[in-house]
Amino acid sequence: MKLKELESCLQQVDTFEEPKILLEQYPTSPHIAACMLYTIHSTFDDIEGKLVADLGCGCGVLSIGAAMLDAGLCVGFDIDEDALDIFRRNAEEFEICNVDLVQCDLCCLEAEAYAKKFDTVIMNPPFGTKHNQGMDMKFLRAALTMAQTAVYSLHKTSTREHIQKKAKDWGVKMEVIAELRYDLPASYKFHKKKSVDIQVDFLRFSKT
Ligand SMILES: C[S@@+](CC[C@H](N)C(=O)[O-])C[C@H]1O[C@@H](n2cnc3c(N)ncnc32)[C@H](O)[C@@H]1O
Image (cartoon, rainbow, N blue to C red):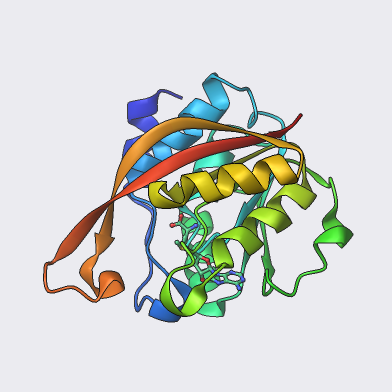
């Protein structure tokens, strides 16, 4: 499947009907999702035939894209039943069978129970701002426990140094694959403008 074709399919994926601000439910745009997944697939060969986990899967745009790029299986994890209902509908509409869902709080998950159970972890975690401080790092910690090969994640560029330091402490190699502009709906920035662009890093973590 070509990049343009993937992006145009992902434009058909339904997203949050009533996004929950406390859960930081802002969807990954079809353009960013397609570029991320295509890079993971074509540059690193970390999707086709692999067991993939999508942490904070929401309505499933990353999982469904991974499934379209022939993941062996992609398992989405999210706390929110409403988002998972939309995910299920999306998967049915695309007639996708190589996805599965787990409803759980990733902060309380016994990540050890899933230790190294996945080849690849992909995620667009909560950025961990305001009421959710540290949530991005809790997701990253769980992801690194669950992945055998690599973790791909989006993080605010302003947190890059902090994450780099943590990665070093944890014995993990971190690469910045791309710098993106992420269109955050204004409601999440408590802002008067309709939307706000923020700088986001697309990161790859692998065991050193
Ligand atoms: C930024 S959204 C990303 C949604 C989706 N992956 C996407 O790319 O469009 C973050 C997701 O994390 C989920 N989430 C927030 N806190 C969580 C928690 N403690 N455990 C599991 N999922 C959580 C939210 O419900 C939301 O779907």
